[in-house]
Amino acid sequence: DRTITLQADLAEGARLDERLRALREALGDVPAEVKVKFAGEDADQREAATFLMTAFVVAIFLMAIILVTQFNSLYQAALVLSAIVLSTAGVLMGLLINGQSFGIVMVGMGLIALAGIVVNNNIILIDTYNQLRSQGLQPREAALETGCLRLRPVLLTAVTTILGLMPMVLSINVDLVTPSLGFGAPSTQWWTQLSSAIAGGLAFATVLTLLLTPCLLVLGARFERRPTPLETYDTDLPEHLIAPRPTREQLQRTD
Figure 1 (cartoon, rainbow, N blue to C red):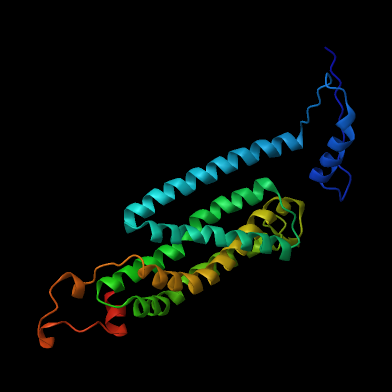
Figure 2 (cartoon, one colour):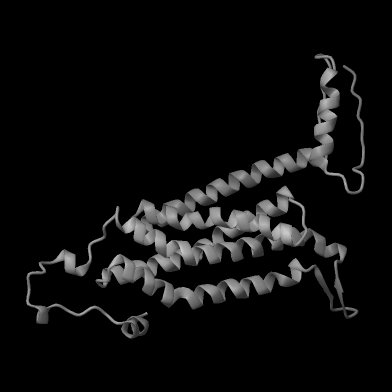
């Protein structure tokens, strides 16, 4: 067997996937006994994509098991994991706003990191909602109280995380030896895609989570009834023996 190795560099401004697609089309008339194998950056990206996809699926599976065990509800566990799907659109939006291309390695790492970040907001909202429901509030009232009580903590957590990523998003390079401050240094380009993906996905998912999660909790209550203290025991009692529903001030003091 004879082996011929061809090497080439990608022209400035050209996309690897487009050039490889055109090359494969040009090699369509090659005889069947001639085997063509692509290596280099393309093979590395495919290997990285396979590894990241496996890691992403394993992470989602482990989180799903923990959430189902914690909430004892498939619907609420799926609602928590829905934040990961919502963050995907934010990842693409963040890359587009910052003018970054889609890199399978860094963007894939950003998605895996987001999977462990954006679910926290939904966990906080759903846990608060369940506590309010156990205290006797109706689904609609519990959802409204949840949004009021957890709006500031969720927003503060997201904003501080996004602001902490801004130096990498803006490609700011700080040299403590010189000292100097620069923008767009080569050492920062590697991390710009990762930080843009995380910041964009977190911002988009946080806004949609605050709007959609309470609505979906109320919708899910129609199909998945949770017993409240008034439903658990006999309610044919005099009104003076039934504890009144807690006010917002009482809920904040007991939180």
